[in-house]
Amino acid sequence: MIRNSTSTGHVINVANFETLIAFCVSNKDVYQPGNALISLNALRDKAKQAREILVECNIKRTAYQNAVGARIEAFKELKPLATRIISGLSVSGVSSQTMEGARSINRRIQGKRLKTRKLAEEQGLKTISGSQLSYDTRISNLDSLIQFVSSHPEYQPNEPFMKPDGLRQFSKELKALYDAVGASENPWFSARVARDKILYSPEDGLVRLATMVKDYLRSVFGAADPAFAEINHLQFRTLMH
Image 1: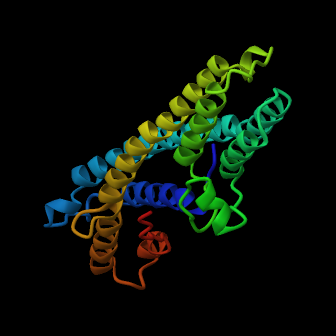
Image 2: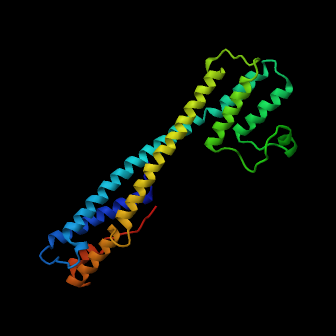
């Protein structure tokens, strides 16, 4: 699982919050705030919510990262396969004009800019800026190449995966992996939104409550009291991401 500094920061916030609660419990004879938001029960509930949402975020993030990784690995096969299709078509006896049409599609799959506007116009293509490398565009370009070679009966490879049906199956697999990323991205986004609300809401988020608790304890013990110094070093950072 990938861990970045922001993810670690969320965990530290929650761990420090639990340390703060433990201090309040050990001093419960003097910890008697009038604000229900920072009562011990409210603080325990917030800590529980925070721990649960961090676990959920880890699960959703891992599912998303796995889907992205699987898509990346599968799409690595696309460019070499397209090149092999072009090679197979070139020895099938089709015309040079047909080959240029196939190569034009392959250039899009490979992410290469068309060399000239004239060439684009000859192939009936719109000129675009930059490489055509988005995943959905690459699938669309692969489908165009499959349709193109399928329309030429001369293209008769012996390898099952190179035949039109095999190519269509590969395209179907790529589409499934592409869809899986989208399906896992929304839950991961929703989990992050929920986490940020629990931890960083300006009204009752964990960081806000921690600040309120420290302010209350400062009023109870005094800023110079050694007891207050035990928890004054605890830091809480807002890390909405």
